[in-house]
Image 1 (cartoon, rainbow, N blue to C red):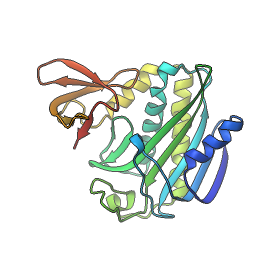
Image 2: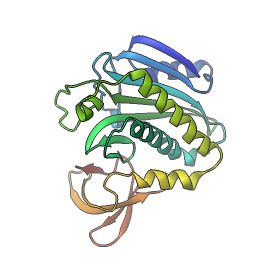
Image 3: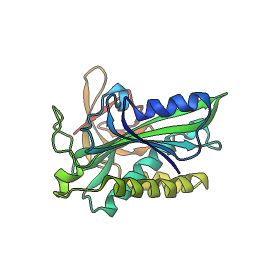
Image 4: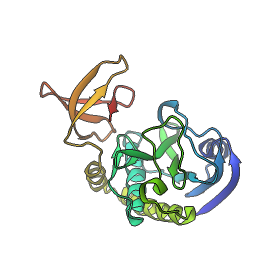
Length: 243
């Protein structure tokens, strides 16, 4: 592993992508910062992180053998790695809210942003960014956000948490690289938030409907059994789970 530590930067993902634009970084090149001024989440949202209180990290992973249509497995791997690492620190009631928000007791504690590098229709590598709320206690206008300290009352060592996440990431990427696709898929679905429970969803047109999450497709679409007993699949921009 090659770790780059920065005091402050706009975005660790953007920093790694700039490096990758010139030449692909080494496998497991990692960028860590104490302060990220323009951290991003899914769908262009902004990630709040108080300086020095959270983990804001990006990892570059070389993925020369993964097909483009298999890229959601990267999301599965990272979700599983973060979740498994947090179980080591006894964080309770963990789940993955599709596609890759990590929750504890229905509160979001970690966001993941994956940006893949594709050249000549081949997946070259992936820039994997994650923000984990560790010792942060206050979140402005984010009632569904929480942190490890708020959940447990314990002050955590950020470096210890990062080391465990990276350890788990290596384990799950090894499964991916040895084609353990079904094992990863099943493990991901086993911790999927609100799986097999009636849930409410909202569409981009502000229409709501009720359904039951049954899992995800290989491409990462959410499988929902609707009220009229029809199995439908939804892409990230097509539906939002209300909770």
